[in-house]
Length: 439
Image: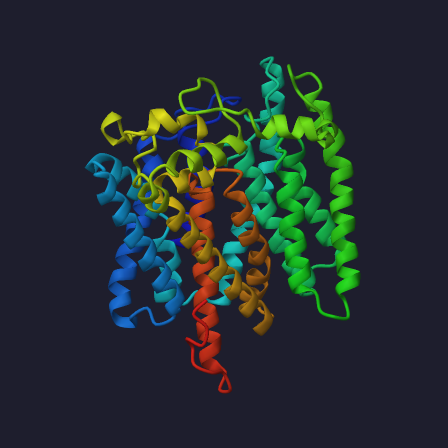
């Protein structure tokens, strides 16, 4: 099930919806685009059937409390705004389709062999992105277009491909720090994995990559090797930057109104990139800073809406049809540029805070597992500290919950690590109670 899920969420969007540069629409029937939801439903059945027997004992109380509080907050937002059934259904599909993946490892023990096999599959999919991205970029230039958005591999859009590849680098860093990869192998693998990000004009790479990599190195380095490992990390980032910047500037040079990376060192240029000063009712696309300011400013007029939001699905467009589109979508559409705007508008500040608490719980579990075991799950947990940090910062960058490749994979491996922490605690005779720490 999980090998199938990994392949489906990382490739079937491309195979059904296609890529503009390759004009690949129709490679697979459109209904197969709903296969991730079907796999999610299978996971729900598995969790219910097997969970009755195991009682989900390896899920820590902190998760139950946070998930429960989030569900209550969502219900409050629905009732407070009288959300119609169509948007509710679309909202449930958006917010909850990947969550069952978190509970699958609580009812089924994934062994070291299982996880190792899955990591090989993830690595294979990552490596495939490079030749495919190069081909897409060549086709794009051949069509007289200069955008890097169509250089997306099998991950639908360029920024999601870059995020996925940075995740893989974080996991590779974990293997290096646990002496499963040499410095040379780690460097070569990192450059191979990141090569597609140099040609797809994803500026977020220069923020997400250093963040994820440095978190992994800071947490995974032992006292005696911390300095040496940080030099390796810094050298990797400098080398990648030396490659990334000139390639980015080369491809952006011919783009109308394109700006080289150096221009963003100018505070005025950075401010112009982040803020347009848009207000509700303005036409045209807003910018990421407006996506933070405008929703908060608008909802602050009503404390109930600020806390609980406008209700799930009530500020979203749905591909299921007009009856499933929220009543506030037209008002806020220009500002739905990243996850934070979507969260604040639909689940409010309370829901956004609880999602961050979930990320914090996952992060703590990653550290605990990485410190207690040096096997494949421990290495995965070490790499997942960087992935989790990227997810936190990424809520101001992209709407990650929309993409199955990001949401399904994150919650599944968060579940693997969370369950492993409890199982490790139970095998340690000198360990205090399993529920020693709720947060």
